[in-house]
Image (tube, rainbow, N blue to C red; front, side, top):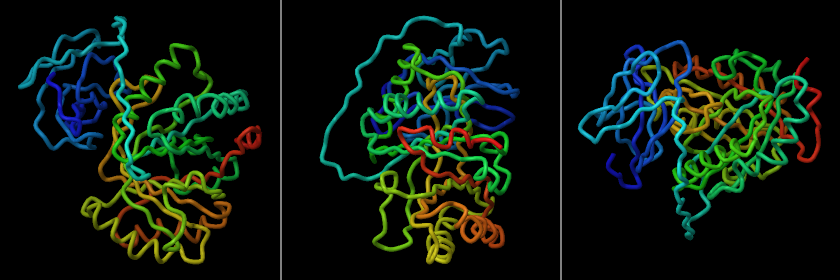
Amino acid sequence: MAPLPTNESYQLWAEIGGRAISLGLLGNRPGSATFTVAGSATPTQLMVTIEPSGGVATPDRAPVAVGRVVPAWRPVGTCTGSAPAVTVRSMTDTEPKKPRPLEITAGAEPVKLGSMLLTIVEPHRGHEVAYNRWYERDHFYSGCMVGPYNFAGRRFVATADLKAMREPDPSEITGEPGRGSYVSVYWVLDGYHDIWNRWAVRQVRALHAANRMFEERDHVHTLLYRFAWEHRREADGVPIELALDHPFKGFVPVWVDRAEDVGNDRLWESLRTELLPGLLPGSDAGLVAAFTPLPLLIDAPGDVPRQEATDRRTLLLFFLDGHPATSWHPVIVELGRRLDAGGLGSVVAALPFIPTIPGTDVYTDQLWP
């Protein structure tokens, strides 16, 4: 397909049940990409659109290529449209890929958060110590932190007592109420999401090829998010760029779905001017940051489940000065109640965590009852 400007990307969609579901980004200079579509629903067709860099949750432009899906998921030929043909291939393809150079530029841009990776993982029972050591001693760095424009990262853990606090039932995010013992969060410099994202996919695929991954764990929720705004308890409080380095003692991701008749602008205005200013003063919640979901690249590793990036959803990250139990009911639960009472939206999941202690196996024996 024709190359696009750096501020645009091809995005692949599957039509399932009359809805367009993002399968990922193809980049602005796509080649062949191997991928699978998991789940019981079968797409009827695939579509390619041209979207802004970073992708969108729902397509609002006409497709430039459309192709019918054949049930067997073998090589299915090409998608045709107003653009040159797009080859769609199955997992049976084994042709080697030649590495392409990745341009890294160094400028004098301000240190400003642009996007993040949030990944929630559940180690298999009996392998929790080995998983913890592999992740903090190898993958935390080799899979993310050594990458370009990835300027901060932090790991957090949910012990059994923290999981028991989860309200409402978080299964839409975690699959089951008690899954998701570890979460890792990584900050990416504003303006460089696509470069970092492409590097990250290539790096993890290289780690797979080098047998540097850990099989005895499950991805619970792994998704990219675009930074939208922050609200500090004090005007001169900790800025979001420093949040992963500041010694906050608690961390709570809260997923909120706005009501169907409420736009993001109205929801966000209510949060920033009324709800959060009414809840944070006098509490342990020092900082709240809002994010919107972004699609994964189409050739991201297959062990990362594809999850729909809905435009109704906002992720709020709460950074706490104390243990999450102190803020749980007066801040987190009360926020959900006020959102519902105001007809603004509903909390899908709220997951309390505390920081891990690098270089130790602390908390690995407290993950489950």
